[in-house]
Each structure stands twice: as C-alpha cells, then as structure tokens.
Image (cartoon, rainbow, N blue to C red):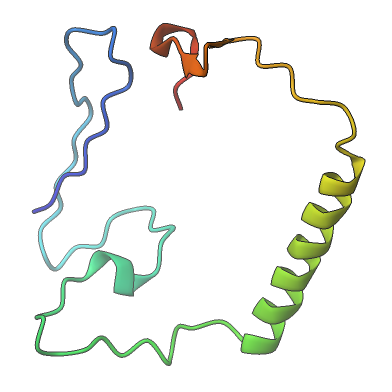
Length: 100
C-alpha cells in the first residue's frame, strides 16, 4: 500500500486523511481515472510494457506543437514587466502564496 501525502500549508499544524477506502484485491474501485500502469507496481528488473496503453504519437506530437505555439504567442504578448506584488528583495513570504 502506498500513500502520497502533501502538506496543504506550512501554517497548519495538523491535517488528516478522511474517507479512506480500501478494496479487496479482486474487487475494483468504483472510479479509476488513471491508467493501470500508474497504479501497478512492477519489479525493477522487469520493465513495464506500455505499448498497449500509449497514445498515438502523431496526436501527441500535434498537441505538443499546439501548446508550444500558444506559449510563444503568450511570450510575445508579454511586453509589460511583471509586477512582483509579493516579491520583497527577491524573496516571497510563504504565507502570501496560495496552495493547491
């Protein structure tokens, strides 16, 4: 069993895990939004076979090119200098940042 925990905020002293659901090995969880290769552990000496679940390379290439074009358009529009409203001497106050 593997848990990945992220501390929501350095200001909070305590946080808990709620609504933890554990299913028997034969029973599938109700919602599974991630691919099986992400949830299954493989031994280090046995490489994972991802060929059946990988997306079409042409589609991925097209989407990456579109994202690159969008970043170039946004970069070209950045004429004004950034406002560093939370920036004080090149540092940020951790309490002023938002956490996701």
